Image (cartoon, rainbow, N blue to C red; front, side, top):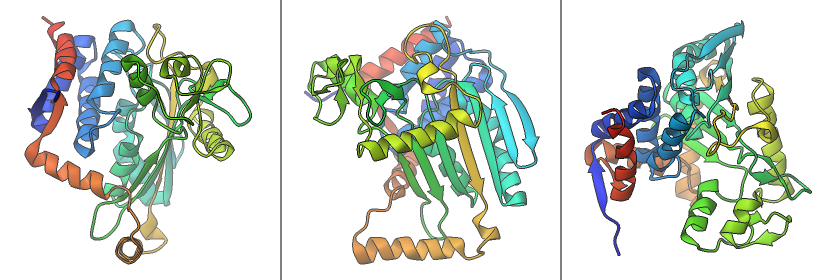
Length: 337
């Protein structure tokens, strides 16, 4: 049976998200920031970090895991450093408030770093790096959250999915965008399989005893597996230090659950901005030529191109959301009445 879908223009989708977020208790600045990020995520590609993840934010606002009245506190401990305490709110707002200054600092000093603590999960990590690439900067982003995946040699969850994102500008095309987690799959894929009572592929997770499992419900009691075994787990640890260590955020082991309870996960987000033109004025030209050579001469897939094409198409065609998801989100907007 084909699922019923509802089509929204991008502007209508943002208004829809703002209404739901405001109804759930978000202040105006938070609602606008998260609505923009949510719509962009779905416009680039229907994903687990767009409107489907918005439900987690809405439920967390109501439950108190997100402080809807948060006012991020910024300090600049050094000329090229920005630190933000998200005040228990969302990661997107703190970054939005500092974005222009982060880009300007990178252009001035060649490199600048943004570190944030005390927030809910960061959503689509690639968006943070992509926005810098649109400004002619190279962006690197790392984030963590509650423990979900096992470390090297262990069977218990010690790291979050700990994604790492990278974006770079090119002269004649979409920015290069790489956004991938340290886990073999996304957490929501296992959660959705468990809800449907379906099995998961081998290599995704272990059960509570640390044994490999294809039972999604048992996987929810155990831990996810890092991609590539120990090497992926090492990357998760590297991201953990970048995201939680540098900014003073909760280590994944200490982060409260993002879907239950009434406490913020206290997640960390670190974003590095680099001005490549200060090192090589022809960087964007050279990168464009190299990516073109890889794609046309060697058949290499260039990450980011399809997402950029989808976003351009969405400006004209809008985005399509499952009607059941629309109804679920609409219920929060009605809560304002």
